[in-house]
Amino acid sequence: MRIDNIEIKGVTCDSRKVKNGYAFVALKGEKRDGNDFIDEAIEKGASIIFTEKDISKKQVPIKKVENSRKVLAELCNTFYDYPSEKLKIIGVTGTNGKTTTTHLIHHILKDYGISTGLIGTLNVKINDKEYTTELTTPDAEIIYGYLHKMVEEKVEVVVMEVSSHGLKNERVHGIKFDIAVHTNIERDHLNFHKTIEDYIASKKKLFDNLPQGRIAVINLDDNNGLKLLDNNKGILVITYGLSPKATITASSIDTDFSTTFNYCLQRGVTTLSGVELDVFEYPLTINLLGKHNIYNMLAAVTCSLLLDVSMEHISKSLKKFKGVPRRMEIIYRGEYTIIDDFCHNIASYQAVFEGVQSMQYRKLYIVNAIRGGRGIEINYEIAEMINQWNNILKIENIIITSSSDCTGPLDKVETQERDTFIQVLSRSGVSFEFEDKLATSIKKALTMLEKGDILLLLGAQGMNEGANLCLNRIKADKNTQIISMPDFWQDIVPRH
Image (cartoon, rainbow, N blue to C red; front, side):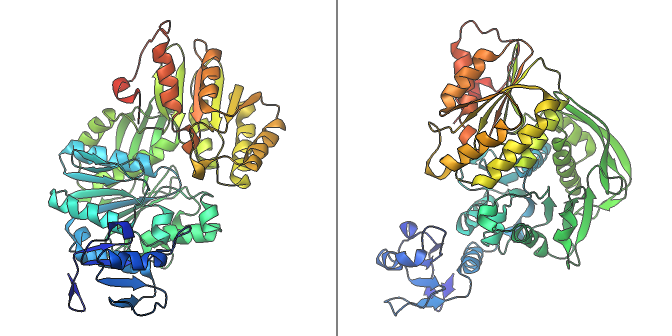
């Protein structure tokens, strides 16, 4: 790639990665300003600089641009020779359900024999190789680098989680999605977006940028779903949900420790390859817990159908799906059951509690990690949600924790966050206690459990080590009688 007759050997926004002949794009972040590292980038060999600021003349060309984040994506797209045009790409956005939905789609397609890539919260997968990632939607240079690698590895379909942060910060700018999926929109990330309107507008960008003739898959039961399509013309829309008005719905639903339902296509649709699908109904079973996972499955099955995977294969594939770590995950099932979930907003707590409501148990215990570094409001709402479900679920005891032994500076629980959580719980009469450390909380909770009980491990980053702590302690207890364990036991103890 050449810019102003300068050969560009690489593109980056990280001055530490600059090499001779690189283009350096200065991005202003929440905590650091890339403009402060322009001199360092030049010293390391950058041959051209892109910035939104007026910068005095340097020994290399300085290009002032209106939106440096868009420019970064455009440069990466060009440098890697427009990789999204050589792939079929499914983008999934929403407050909850992105990770489970993308993993379901990836599992079905891979099991069908389609060479598949995945970019998401937990990891990046390219065929049988896995790579770690720090962000749900990585920076543009990383995304485009992975897409380029996927093209080289002969990947056919890429499934991608697309976060509101990634959309607002132009990390997927220029990527041509074939299918865009909306799971739901709830109040979340307002410490970043400030208003729900900005949050929705960020999600909407995924659908605004869909090429003509491509497909939007929208959750009709979500009040904000159709807002994503405002002023959007030329794309095909497929709706799903439990509403009888949806294109795709579910009937004969049965949920306990697994989920069965009939997938109902109520109006004909056309796949990406032009195959017309007529109205049909097909029974499905999967080892996932909770009503919310019906929505995830409806979306995932629909995307698979749009890529010409048969319902017969989808049905067989779903029965082999082992779930997603920390998404209503049964990490232990012996005399008692332990379920782990990455609850991070009131909608995810609601989904977990609805799932537990359909289960049979003697007593219910909860270890809950307070949401650190996210403010008073979200913790007030979560504690209030627990109060509302207390009598319905007959919660025996809750141990709330700051997880001070397991969190970094970004997720540290502030005094006001802790006090707010405790004050709200105190109003409802729910039995609870506070422990500063997660390890102590887990140890105490395990001593309470008896045959037929359920223990919920709930919380976001502050509960990430909860499963390891639980399972390692159970494994060390020689008196524990294991009735049944997940077949991924060896992979999960310890889990890193």
